[in-house]
Image (tube, rainbow, N blue to C red; front, side, top):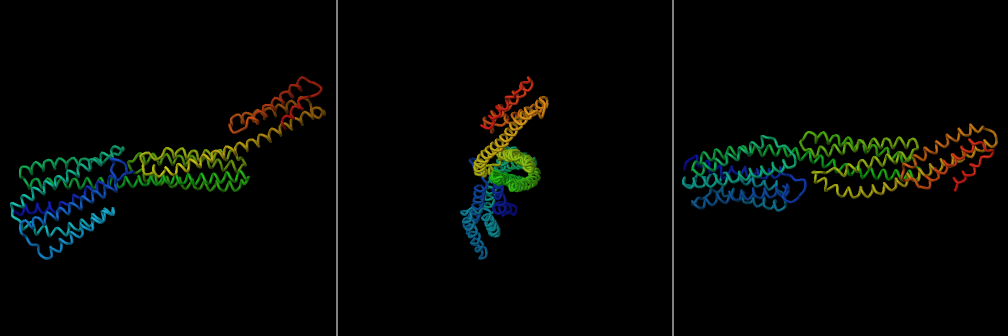
Length: 480
């Protein structure tokens, strides 16, 4: 038999299995964000590709043994044992596939192919040249088909990634295109009987596909690593929001119990959580920013901005509470967590695994936020009511004191008018603040209006100069 043809046959039957690995690698490159419909599915696709690879090795074993039987060839004892070894390895690989352990199955199949090599060499050397030529043509045709399938897989993966806004390195697409053209020419040469030329073209196409597959795997490997970082950051962002809401809820408990120092301690701890989350997101952003996934980078940017703004509000809340401004403190707390929950609604996007994980978080966060919103509203309403009530009572008391001093002659009418004008201005400023707040009961706003009118009547009476100021009696309404 011609030595060159024998070498070609051997390369096709044995070494050709190397390209069978490529589809499996491509499927791994098509790692999904969620198991849905027609999109590539990493786990299922990995098992499917591994199954195809194992089956192909089985086909090679069967084909070599059929050739040996067809030409009445007896394998030496040692090679017979290798046949049993290859079959056992393939059987074990099949069992692993049933358990979903694709990578281990592929490793066993590769060991089976290595055990097959000396058997194939022995058989190929023993068959007639005419038979080896036929086997070479059949093998080359099958090998071209396998590589054409690899081309299709690679193109599907590239298209899938490009649809998601990713720029695939040009060298990958060029290698796949050139390999596809070489395979076309190889098929033409094979149809003309030019086996050696077809084999050389096939070899070059295989080399290019191997490079393209390796480059794509390297590219997508880095991509999925960055996406995994972004998805982890989204989940941590949501989890920390939940923790912060619980902290804020606890601080409201303490403020309602007038335990200001305890509330301040909890808010300070919340600020430390925000600072820790900010550092974590900054590190994640540095990792993701080195890649080309715009969705992941934009998601991290959104979360980081939200945390930075929330930290500013938290600082303001702590400062307000240190000044005993409870209303200002809880208003800033509300702004802090509202900033975070608003950002949470917008993150996820094409990070679908994160979006799925967020579903449970968002439900719990939404319920806790509604409760916290209501509690803060009630707390602000009570605090403002207490503050406004005390202020109105103090002003009414001061009005009566000024009028009493006028009647007793301790101050002049002009001095009294000046004092009343200042009190009126204070009431108007309070009214302005009360009008801007929906939480304030209408009763308080009405009381402020009545007190202002009372002061205005007193000023008018003092200005017209009656001997007795009657406005003082109207201030008694403030106590009703």
